[in-house]
Length: 349
Image (cartoon, rainbow, N blue to C red):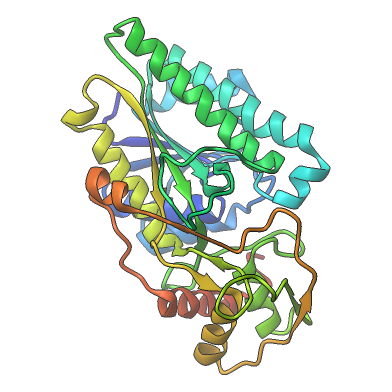
């Protein structure tokens, strides 16, 4: 096995493509597996443009067990970063079976292939949506889990599966135990500073920042703010937004941790990846208007069911155990988003 080969599922997607850049620049060989259902191959062409290095690419669905096994046999990775998955909360409520089949079953196939290939080092792309409601807005990893939509529940189910795999190895005193980092993202935004790669959602964006950017550039007419009567300083919901480049650097640090003495006997641990600070919807809009000089047309709409007033990360465990912390601020997030949007008004073409 090549100790420097990382297999990245969903590597052509928004977060995956940024991870490929950081991995290649850190000297890793990168193997991407992506079915391109919610991504475009152009992102990997841009990754090569940024780094001068070309990741290996297989257009394969992770649920195709034989194809996946053949890739493992050919490429011999030692670590998998698992981004592949559907991620729209609203769609998950309309099509829950699709989400459980793609996200949960896909992970079962992936881990089965990994076990047969004796590749048992995994960094999993989880989400803060696994948490339940709390009276404290700053979430630590030991908060009770209680996802309120099928997307979040699919992530929570996968976490349970991975914890069980790890526990079974420990109980059986496996010579080659599972080493797993569950990275719970808060709200990734921003883009690579080159403006070559960024978030390119299919259809109407599900997330705030690409929606704001598309209103600013004239692609969309108006932003809806869901609720302005929350118990927050300006009445709009507060969330923890993290620059996508900071986020993916957390995965590099997680790989280093899995290779360290602390994981010698295996283990499966969760880490929050967030800034530890929240911004309201109106603060995001104001920051965007200041950076771009463009007015953001918005309207106030009714609250959405299940939305919390305030939610942000406590990232202390990631600092302590992964030696990771954010480097970029809100100005960087907005500036890089706008750079990407203006250079790619129609996204990847």
